[in-house]
Image (cartoon, rainbow, N blue to C red; front, side):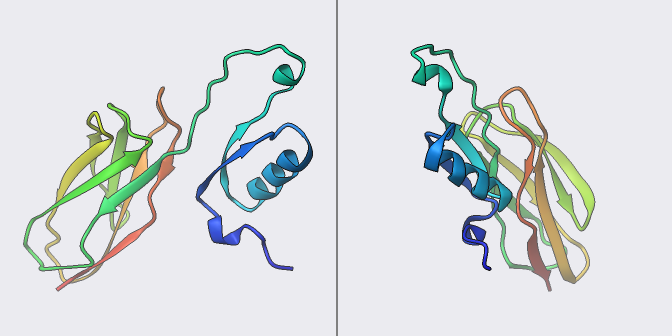
Length: 147
């Protein structure tokens, strides 16, 4: 049997009516498949009692990084954390070692420099620290050929 939600594993899905019926079944199946969820559904609303809800969305990290660069040259890399917020703390990992710590600007953006000295294949990963405005998360691993 194939996993129905494997093509959206790691992505964020919004499910309405997640407290019962089809919405609940879909939420349980997607969660079991590794889909990150934002759930909307409330027994309080069903009974006419409403309360304010706080939703913490897992961050998505976008890195604009070249696939091939020259050894010894310095490259400015930009990235963004979504949903955008000022002051999100993150670290960039190069070849398994911390390259540096950064904080997002008002649109969730951040920049850093890379200048690998040795030719070969290098990997980069951005990790978001959990904070008041966000949960922890990480980017996919980016591979860069240094020539």
